[in-house]
Length: 280
Image 1 (cartoon, rainbow, N blue to C red):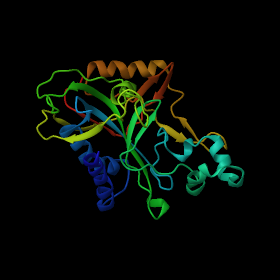
Image 2: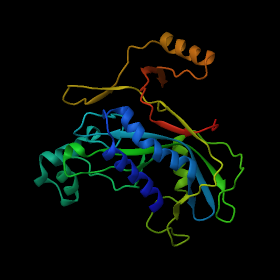
Image 3: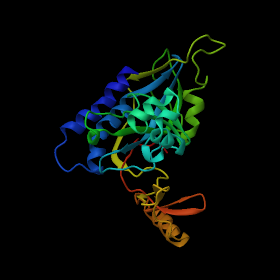
């Protein structure tokens, strides 16, 4: 994983060296070189026998004390459970296992390269806690689509036509097929997950960023108990269907509305999804 960690560290370097207006587009520009390297020139090798190749990844970036917010992101203080807020307010009542929560007045920052599992799939994190709170940030990429390949003598099988799986939650079974434990009862070892850099991969990076899949635009609320909510609740089914028809007429068109369950929302239009060409 060291090679992947080095790639992700480049984001912070790019961020520190960035000149210009710091906004959502700047965040994307700083991550794009990392995304290109991850998608075009690397893959996960599991126990030396099979490969998980990423087809698309989605950036999540949130500043706890800055101006750029990503309220859908799971590992942020805006999503801190109520019980943890009680710990912060009354630290003397709780055991010291909560010291990290108390010290940070919220979630501690993940170490770079941590796998964060949640209801939408698996994130690879590259958060950064800095001396000045306002300079700290949460950051990760979600494995949005991927495919499983049989390694040939531990190497990438050039020319394999296996299709990509676009259901991000399937990654649980493929990346952690032995579960997550200190020691597997059958093999007496942990699964070995390696990141392999391989510039011989026949993968072409799509330079065009896209909006993230099923991510609605969020707005901040002033209510005491409701910190975030999805925007665009007033969108009608007619508005949504009109966008669907535009997409049918022009495949390059990006719909501005999405349907999640039985409700319709504004699409978050930040271009934070990165992908390879021809992964449909």
